[in-house]
Image (tube, rainbow, N blue to C red; front, side, top):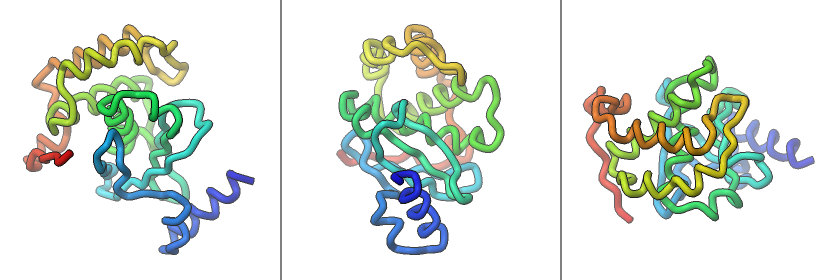
Length: 182
């Protein structure tokens, strides 16, 4: 039932219907206290759906040719704001790096590193923030999809933050560094 209503909402948005916006698809969701936006590898805006019982913090997908980030609002709520931003950017990275079309064995690590580097580059979080995520990330057992086990994942994310040569794609295009207002 819920899946049917969601599919109808997605289809209505795909044909330009206003009702889909009322179903909860957002172009600029508030994540970690600030507005966020994501564009995929084609430059198409990625819409965000906040839901519950997702089974994970977030998930990147394409439904009816529309790029979607689904976020579990209950799981996000208990995380620090900067970690919420990281998880949103991780899912965004799957769209930016085209993992939703062509996943690889390294997709999860690539998304972690891209999200970390983008967050550093954009000033969304600091090294101290990343260090502070350890207690939250450590609880994860990893996944069969390629997420590293918690302590390894945290060390990997911190290593990505510390490598200045690994700037995100936007930096290589000379995109102006964003300024945040919080």
